[in-house]
Length: 501
Image 1: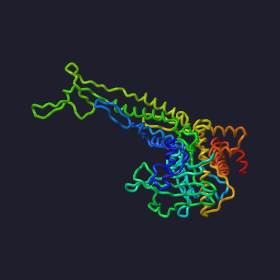
Image 2 (image 1 turned 90 degrees about the vertical axis):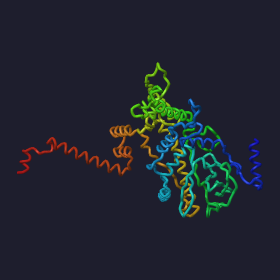
Image 3 (image 1 turned 60 degrees about the horizontal axis):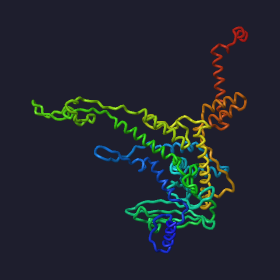
């Protein structure tokens, strides 16, 4: 209660000019999102990058006291996010629009913005951080698309379907000063408003004091009002997973948000596996007298029995009775470590919606399953769940592009249109089972050869018909050659003689 009261008082003081700077963005405006969500995003981001201080900074005791070191990481958060993004979106995905002219125009805009490459990359960030944002805008007489990660966007208002208002946050440094650029997207009296603000601070923990945009942005307007825009021109994508950390938040959660304990255990096991080779290296105990230097009476040179720089040897005072050289090499627990890591990988795969066995560790590195999966598998169902949100995000992006095009008179807004996305399911289907299924359908008379070829090879009907003609032609040629081989195509001598007469 007191925290909110103080925040509101500081807002009023700031508006009255009694306070020169603001500490947090939430002090600038009432923002209905908990700071805890951004703390989680920062944690997911660190884990995705492969270094989270609370996990990977560890200590251990030696004879000389307590030591610090960095624990090794398998970076499975990165592997899972990349795998999910690759399964769902690739260059074979097709965006279809009912209006052919509009479809051609939209595809040209997306091609100019390298959409396939950039969307795939930020889709991975979205799965890792719980969300990402796409924004359509107009610059240099072209429609452009920009992308923002979840940690650089703050929702301000939303409905049951999407986030309708938000602020984009970007920071940069120049000299000893830190600058924060805020781009507000809000609705006021049915008008779509875009406001730009720039703040300057010498403290990384504060937004600072508002300064003119011209300080760093030439020609950037402080406020743009759109009267004709009907839909928000940014799109917030999040994984199709319920937010169990803040059920009232419109923000998404990382695909590995509920598998953190397993990820930590994986890094501990992997770190132990690495250290097994360092700590279990070959050691030979020799008496300390054997590594002492002695003077050769003939030459006067110092002579050492063992190489003092060789780390295999450990010199110890063994006494007169135990002066033998001893090999204390230990057996490495490679099999046990590999088994433990694979068990954890199976748990991790289950927690994020993959089949058990999707990730395997062979003692060298992590491998992802290269075989395709059936339509009844957990991986395929998870893929389809996320595709629902991906398709909705692409549909909203097309809407945003059309809104910008209409606002800047690039092309008129179509009266009606429908957008659909055809995902590439070939990477998530059992091809052998599909081929056997189609052969059985054709043999039973329940499907045509053309339709079967279309399904198996992913061809259009004309392409399938052409391929069928080629196949039939090759089969006819093969049959003719086989008949000639056995002499079945030759005329009997009598008939040939009669024909000659």
